[in-house]
Image (cartoon, rainbow, N blue to C red):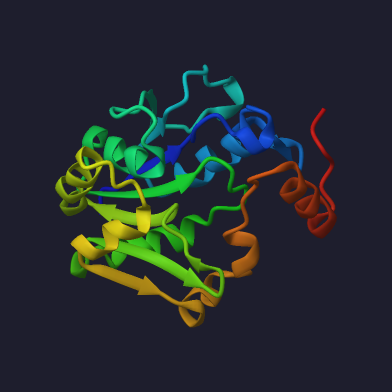
Length: 205
């Protein structure tokens, strides 16, 4: 199954002082490098949406193409990022992850994508709610996303009303490892320090 992947670089990271969260170092490697290495094992094309930096040698994904693209609709948040990813990807199914998730699981993402034949959007759900930035989207989501962007309706969860959704719950998720770890993200310095405490990581300089 040919598969695309997208890393959403996000906006200005106000809670992180405008810092590039993908450059944060976890276990001696940037989150971005970790994500690219993981996604390259399942995807034929990786897009980094909304980030204009240069990929370092440590980001070498082997034969998988990695590209950076600007958001097609500026300032539209994650929904704009998903819209851009679906527009830019040459593949009908794209796994989408946020740039601040150090432990994205290729096995989980491949599983989500495998369910996309019977749904337009496949999304994990835990006690914390839905995780639309660790999910699989098909091209069927593109037109509904464009409509909502045009109307200024930017909530990701609202897109669920317009497409066929397959929810992957805790019972399924636990087959792929520690759910809390796989879906952990770094929205703020406090989140990063909590991650360090839990995993024994060293902060980046």
